[in-house]
Length: 446
Figure 1 (tube, rainbow, N blue to C red):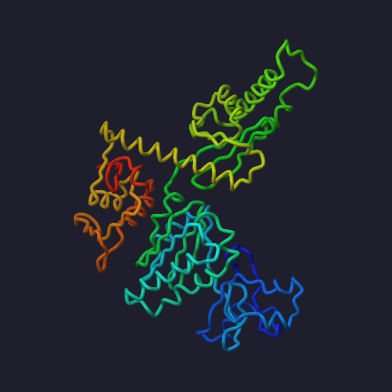
Figure 2: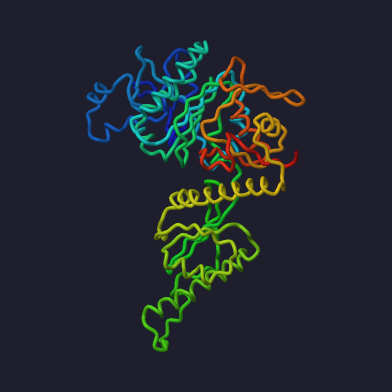
């Protein structure tokens, strides 16, 4: 049963007469001419009928070619068979990265789009025109429509674009069509090459370390564990359920304390119990950074009473009692990602100052080290594209500033090879690079 780009399943469509409701996609495909246009699977032919539109008027107004989900027939009256465009969820991207990096094809189209203005599909339409032009200039003509057609249908699906997060990556090849939503803006890029360009995916797959998030208030406390853009709640069975669960309800003497002082004392007692419960549950032996989320006043009290040694200075200020997990995860990652990158930048500078690990910024050395699995951390300046060829030592890498026939995108290969060998790759603004230049790598060994 086909699955649309929203992850919903739709039953296969029968003939226009609706006499074969149980036909499968394969049976329909057998009946069609191989040249019949293919529709995107986001279809709901009941929309107009739900609004009370008569069936005869519905069929009369239905365009033969239009927005995704409204195509009924080809020009010759044949039924349209949907083609599937796979969705790669953010949580699965690390596992899919290897498949994308090693996908065998003579033509691979990589499209990255940021969210602003994409509601009408115009940025994707422009990107597809750019991809078509690049392929025509490269002499690739026969497979252009086969590669681009599923994404062309997607460009007209306004519901899809309005529901997407801050960015999207689309990967197209003759027999491969996939997209992945991104929780950040990757910029706008269109690449046609012999492999997929994956450098803009580094925030999702660069091997960022794990961290904790504690969403805290006097009503409740929840612990989460994150890794990259993934986050899951940590079950703490003995976690106290708010201040009232800790403070005795019987009448007590306040010893002349003002009401505000009593509230602060109660908050301290509650947060001490939260901290004790977390320490018992495992934080006592952990060294992961802990990001606090909550109201400034309450977070300040918790900082004063906690015994955990790895609470981050950064915090998420505000009421996070009822914030959905995806919203919390996105906000938390923005803070934690900057923290990790800062840690890595400082590490590079320390290595440079003290010589505690080999560091190189020479492109030829970085290329060799990446292919040999020797890069522990890699920083690349945004916008840098190096082209050339490299097979293996002892042959030296051939590097060009502009693409020449037969060249590979070495910048992309630097990122891919570093991540495939378990290193961290960061594509960074030039002003945030740990050293001057276009790239720098900390090596595991010389």
